[in-house]
Image 1 (cartoon, rainbow, N blue to C red):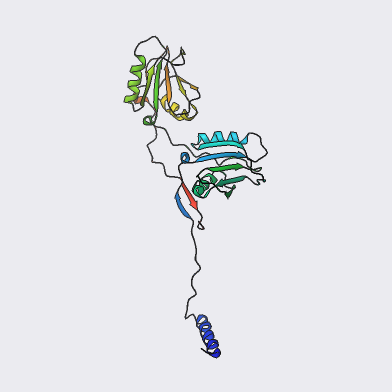
Image 2: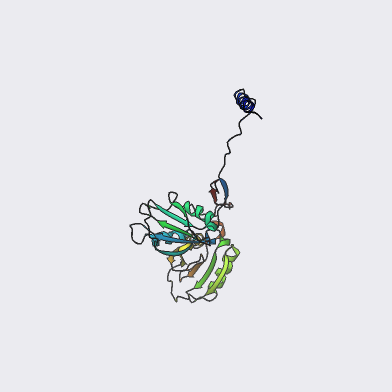
Length: 261
């Protein structure tokens, strides 16, 4: 093709665009992808302090354990560079979804990819860190979710066995029945003993137990102990028990994956 021909051809294409004979290709757009977040207990979450408040990592780690995360290392940050803002979330390529999930706890924290072969994530608290996002409302606990141990602190025989059998008929899971391993003697009606994770379970059991008092111990599961005291008169009649709200299947937690990934 001669040079004049090239000019004519170019002019023709330009004229065609100007006359809307051809349509310019649309600009490509991308949309963030929504997918189910990893389970909280499926990856290790380390909490590192790079801020000015001493002991902050321990406080945050304790709260994360209450929320169900598998907390690993809790210490000061040992990276030899400053961390600004509310902090950083460090992750390896296998832990990107996990990092996005952790970012929901501190939305202003910056994602930082590091050379790491696992899904473990570091939550690094910066100098401007204030608090985690509020804890979501916990779903109600039902009798079928609660293991109950019944300990008889009285001198009445078979009281523990009879009471536990009644609780099982009401939907609770059968635990141990015996004298109290802690060798306590309850003079009042009853004591409900539970750990930090079992507060909702203890409150649910209390709807069946008259005049119960609460006692927290160091257990790490959600089981509860019912200690029968000298004034024990029996469970609250079934018809008078406060009913839990109807069961609603929990919706999965979602993460938004940016389109560049």
